[in-house]
Image (cartoon, rainbow over all chains, first blue to last red; front, side):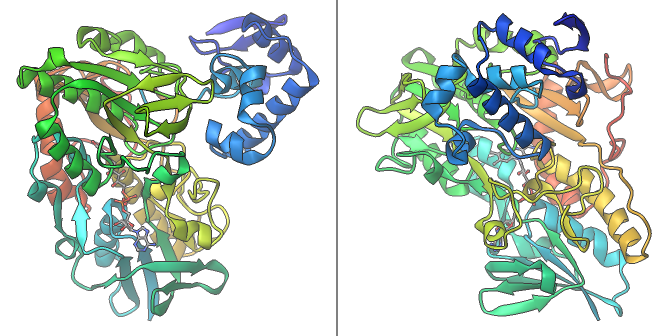
Length: 102
Length: 409
Ligand SMILES: Cc1cc2nc3c(=O)[nH]c(=O)nc-3n(C[C@H](O)[C@H](O)[C@H](O)COP(=O)(O)OP(=O)(O)OC[C@H]3O[C@@H](n4cnc5c(N)ncnc54)[C@H](O)[C@@H]3O)c2cc1C
């Protein structure tokens, strides 16, 4: 369905994830973060950029993978994106949420 | 003589041997298939074995029975692939190939989580993704007196992603039948945002957990298993207590892929989503659970892939462009307990929806809706697997590409 984020018309899934990454930009990301109660810092953006790279390279995203990545440790990941860090960070990054088949 | 070498004689490798033998001239092409084990397991049966619905004999057969005449079947451990040299090293032998098919599947890696494969492994911490785990769990359940049972999976991707949920539904039925459901506290623990993650499925199926009184813990990224306290603990320091833990560990491709330098972090091989050719090497093709394609890791998926891959191998041999045909099609029955099941039919882009299958308006199977007929379908799948799928016989009325007919979109 359509939504307006940061004044831009974008397509999102019913739970608010962008369905077309090409519609993503930093302003859109900032607005999604705001809705999740997160104020973005440089560190947040570094993590978001890394997630986008992983997804582009079709690499699996998981908490364990993040631990192995050396980009950040899990405690910091939870601090930056409280609640479900993968669920929240992927939403801000404009990529698919981690999901199952149903 | 040219050599088509297939690594792995599980679901996908066996199907490819059966598809390719009649299509390649015996005078020109030798086909060799390698697997470390002589037993072929019907893995979907590992879901039923713990509940005494299937017996041991129903989930395993000699692999040799399913390899066609004219294919040489080698029972050895595969050590390493040398893709630049077109050769594969087995434990005590090297085979050169012209075309390689990687079908080495995926398996559990409990050692990825601290304490999981610890002192209580197969005592009160079980997997059901291996024959040994599933059987040990059956024996445990036969004498289980009740308490907190936690069903958990570690991270995606896992093969047959709905199996943990099916397990918890079947556990509910099993304890009901035994007249001890009130003695068992059932909890489903998932790393994802919900037991269901797709909008249509969430809307139509969330009632199942409520109806069966199954608690759900979401967003649980397991950090370790505490074998003293009988708890699983996540990175946010949340703990869930259990008396009996049934877990699906991280799933990974075989270490062989890592040794060969051909995989991603989880040892899955980067593969073209639609042609099934490896992304790095022209004469290497990948099928089934061993790929990194974003389709479900399921036997039905391997079946649809096999049809496309067969055509593509023949095109490749003729020097023609490959078909970008495979669409991620999956078709899976999902047990919901009490002799009912759901059916889902979906692909890379189409999420599971309600409707009729395979005939629009007629069915007889219903999509994303519980029915007794779907449960018979799931049980019939075992027969279809041994007698049709492995032999590479097409399933009547179900095409390799997903059809939109009958789907309520
Ligand atoms: C509990 C459970 C329930 C399931 N339910 C369903 C279901 O309902 N429907 C469905 O469609 N699918 C289901 N599946 C998934 C299905 O079983 C798999 O997707 C399918 O078997 C994948 O086939 P494959 O050939 O890729 O891998 P496998 O069948 O696992 O075969 C891989 C083979 O490679 C061999 N191998 C690997 N490494 C080496 C090595 N180094 N040397 C020698 N040999 C090696 C292995 O021994 C194995 O025989 C289920 C799976 C599980 C575990």
